[in-house]
Amino acid sequence: MVEILNSLVANFDPRMLVMWAIGGLLIFLAIKKEMEPTLLLPMGFGAILVNLPLSGVITQGEEVGALDVLYNAGIANELFPLILFIGIGAMIDFGPVLSNPKLMIFGAAAQFGIFFTLCMASMFFEINDAASIAIIGAADGPTSIVVSQKLGSNYMGEIAVAAYSYMALVPIIQPPVIKALTTKKERLIRMPYEPKQVSKLTKILFPIIITVIAGLVAPASVSLVGFLMFGNLIRECGVLNSLSETAQKVLANLITIFLGITIATRMHYASFLKLDTLLILGLGLIAFIFDTAGGVIFAKIINIFSKKKINPMIGAAGISAFPMSGRIVHKMGLAEDPQNFLLMHSMGVNVSGQIASVIAGGLILNFFM
Image 1 (cartoon, rainbow, N blue to C red):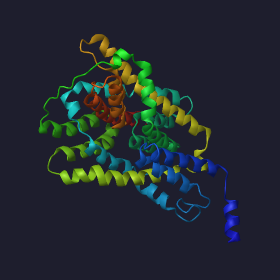
Image 2: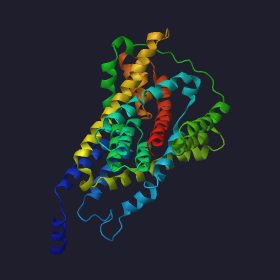
Image 3: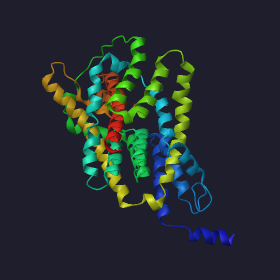
Image 4: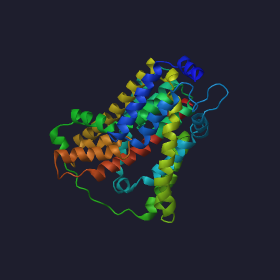
């Protein structure tokens, strides 16, 4: 017993306490604030696991850790993020976008933060690391993991933590930015929803056509877009309802658990507690803010030339944080006017942002691989 205690003391580092606190904070946000609990709770608990003295969950010496096995099996080869995309695709209804295709331009405009942050990050990091950090602005954890993994970034753990943490903090980050960029009069603009019938054939062809177009424009995005659209095709084909339900619930939840706790292998104090980590977190926040601002400002510009005014708040839903961002915009609209229902418009922009962020990730890979 004395030998064990001496060994624990000898291998204890005060920085472990900091990581325990970070893990505890993530767990607190997951349980108390209900911020993306399926992601933050596994990440928080995993951060504590990997920062215990002589922890058996990570490889130390000749003994291979269980989490390192999972990491090599599911993240090092990008398997977990891509499989998760099948579940996400099965959850998405592209109906609002297909009935009003012009909403897709807001999804593209809201990716501005990625490329703005790339310019900033390149002043502090090597270009591949800078590109990986910039993709945090995609507001899409799986895309961030795949891009940083393919580009061989040295900061994949920090990038994944930043991406998922800011996704969970969207309800805190977006509203102040939206209010700062809009007037009350603009926030009161009503947008009546005029549903248009979208045929089943259109819904089936859409994921196929998007995959082909994305593959031609950004070949490196095929795995990202393809798995997302395959999940959506399962949903819309009408003959695989049981598979669609499994992908949306069982598959997505299972992979999310594994993904969250496995990311923690890159949250060891020795590699995580560095000045670079704080800089990455700061740049990630800038990416989110400028993504939100890009969508809102683009909507305001359109209103200058358009007779039929758009509520500029829906532009903020163009980030890929699905479905949180769409819901936030809807709630903000109701707070200003209880009769202003923006949900279908904001969700249409939100799902277009999901596509745009994946394509943006593919473009980043095309540029820097």
